[in-house]
Image (cartoon, rainbow, N blue to C red; front, side, top):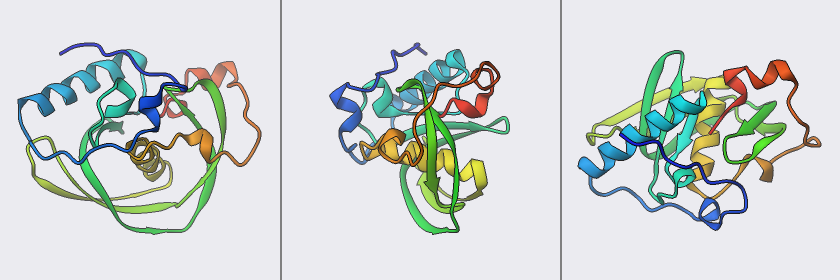
Length: 164
């Protein structure tokens, strides 16, 4: 495992659409191991491959002490909507209110190529939408509805505030 450098806003790789993962091999497993180590070091909730300079449709999400290794995600269904505060490891301290669906039904593959189905609501769903956006070259700052702000000291320690 290796700690990877997280790319920051302005890096052109963050704006590229990622390639579909075709090989479920040791290189993909190593990428997930690196994403896990990097995410753990920064105490975030999610980290997408392009945020560490790898243009593959892969992301790691840690939520409620569960790890989701998401490869080639496909959104099957969404419903509802909610607006909530978001931040991003690739954007620094900037934050903003973003409107997203409240529910997601998602098909994806794990690191071994096993197909998975997932349903998520509320903030859990938001984390998946945020990471999937990264795979399409979209940052949360593209979707901000309210003026951006700096987090308060209490928000800086809140793991929810550190989406990938």
